[in-house]
Length: 111
Length: 115
Image (cartoon, rainbow over all chains, first blue to last red; front, side, top):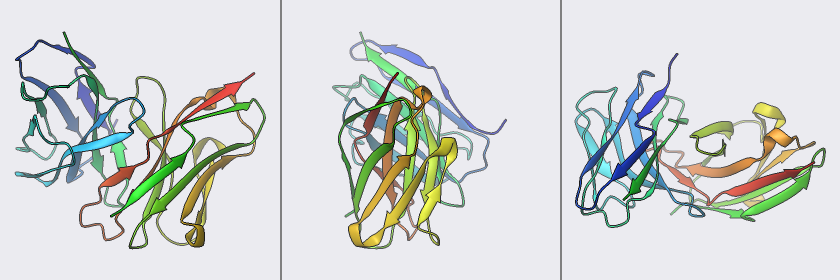
């Protein structure tokens, strides 16, 4: 089945650690996105990529990094510089009809 | 700059009653408009979208929304609520130019359905 796969579903980070969330899509979409979701705040854009080897900061990029070496993959690294990383993270990709489709999300918790 | 306002962070209806979730947007250009639904611990699922053409848009699960340019609104409705409709609903707007296609989301409305 075509879709967006995020892993892991649950991840725990210790203070000072970097962690990486995986996002893979087999929809052949060029554009991919990472959003952060906090209760009562909706979704906020972290990074997006329109094409391989190119990406731009979104509204809340500080403390995060991404790479886009392959069309199918857009991993997100939450660095130790992100002071409040506990949240639900959603990866998405955009179809040629300008519709954005989402993965199932990953929970990150600081312990 | 584009923005989305969803009126009411929580809406409660009885099973079988009308569902009305309100969304107003601000955009300097004609926008694309979307409604997504999110069940607990899951990603967002597209309910419906408006891009062009007919202003009344029908989506999945019996939902529909009407684009009203004069009111800058895109309210979501369903004639008869079902228990399975309990979820969080997000309205979103996208730049019609498509140069970025990024979505700006409202803060969401949590729908509860009482038996």
